[in-house]
Amino acid sequence: MAYAYPYRLFAKIQKFVTYYYCVSSAFVLLTISVERYFLVCRATKAQMTSTQARLLVGIIIFISGLLVIPVTVSFDMASLSLTPNVTITQCYFRHTPLAWAYYVSLFPANLTILILMFILYYQVEKQLVNICPKGQSETSTEQQPISIQFGICLQKETHSY
Image: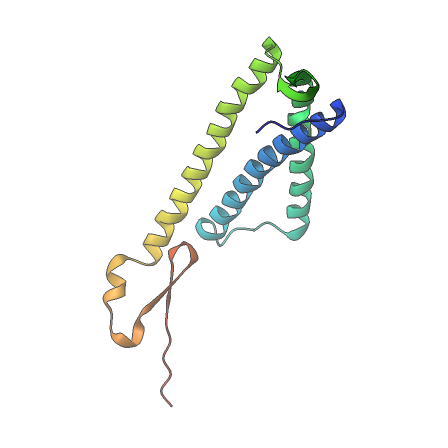
């Protein structure tokens, strides 16, 4: 979707914010998958503390901001004449070699994050299947499994007084 921008700064800020959200979201999702991996697969080891989590969020904010700075250089303004009396200024992608290199590098970076998340969640799934085997659901009616998010298997306790 094309937006009409009255000033160059507005266009660059909008592009920066859009790309910043994408990059930081990818890092946050990777962090969540790493944390879940450690919670499930390395449950007896030390876990991330709230101080470490805050520090990691700060690092993600900083690195995401640095990685998105080239976006402000890659986009520029162009005037587009709609009718003889109506001209709008539009933000567009400049096709420079540096801009193309930046965008071409985004694909393998995002693909790497996606593959890492897949591997981590696969390990989590494998661990959960070992904890709660498929045949376990066919136990007595008093011990029916309760399935919660990510397929964690818990046994329903019945009390007879």
